[in-house]
Image (cartoon, rainbow, N blue to C red):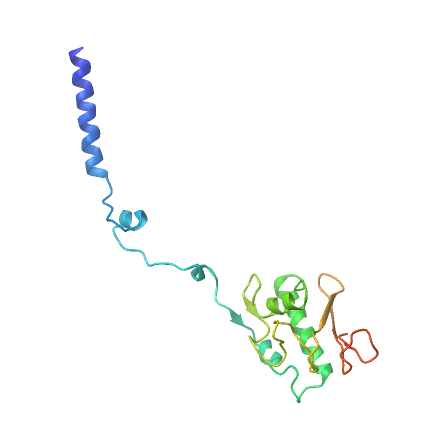
Length: 167
């Protein structure tokens, strides 16, 4: 019985010694990871995990949307090129309503690529792409890689004779 008591005492002593030799020294208010490394880690914000927005060269052409230097057909062609480029780079058309498609073209997409500048006379107050008469474009996905873009034209009414449609 004396041997068992002696053995338990030695094991307890070794356990206590190991505890004090290996324990982390945590300072009040310091997160455990920083205490473990013995160096203060830089604070990270949620934006550190989000890649920076990359503005593509086509955004320069898009800045001219609705300008007097372009025709309404030019505007539709620029938009069609942006949507086509988006599809080639990201593997398919942007999806959703006008405001969601606009957001995707402005960089709210998995690769954070901006095909469209962040502001301009081509946007309404709701963040939708508008034609030169102030009417939101209508986007109609013909397939996963082909999008029809329609301007309501001068009369500002969709599905009339003066509508301007992408090829």
